[in-house]
Figure: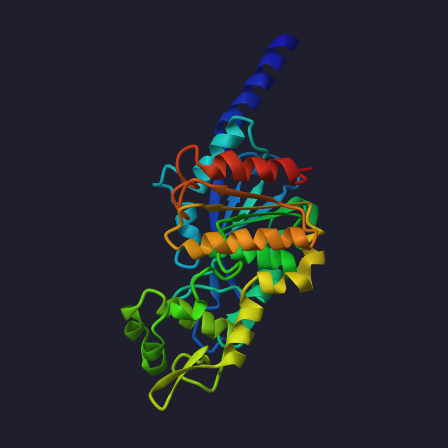
Length: 349
């Protein structure tokens, strides 16, 4: 009888384990930090949360990984069920193999109608940093069983999301202990003059976003201006520009250039925030050697050297690939580099 009961108990455990499934849940956060933005960005933010297979089988808390997507992507794309290389499938696989401990993943929504968030605070385009720090992270800690401390929080980001995690680590050292930045941009300038990219004449005369489509950089630089040179008294884009049209001539506004560079480019902020970066338990930055825009490669090389000059210990790698083709493929860098790095340094218990 005793053996029969033991066998039934073992079968019950096996059955429960076999039927344990991870899930991705969708929530909406109504952000007060974004509610008053002038551009009309929706303050209702769709947040996706990955709960690991055992989450509903016990009462223990879990560490949290925050994922920050690129500007022209969305958090939904990261977890798409019909994509064999999606984040959920990858986590499920690695957890089932015992290669990665269970964790909650929170993917915020940083989309916007024109290009996406540039991860800054202002009244024109929204207080995105406040949204992350004061709303998204506290919400997750209140809604789920999390290990609600920096030692058990990691931040990973891709491209502009990679920029975001570096900036958050600089500004708010209390949030995360482990940061992995995948091919970040805006870490520094490249070999090409920054102001040479967009069509400034069109940017100074355009009345709609569609008029900016004559140049691939004009939308990006206008969204950048809205974030770092906001001007609520200058419709229709509510932003000042680094290059202005005066008497039919394009003239560089040096004050605007300085203001944007000093608040947007991360290398210009290292002297102010190096001590905060030194508080991280672990930091890794990587980038593809063959980015179609070689300025991104050059900028990251400059950035990581400057980190060393200021005593910020980190790992850095320039891999063979471009900005996009090595991360989410089968056996790609998310699997072989990002998750092992998180596993090595994050506190899971």
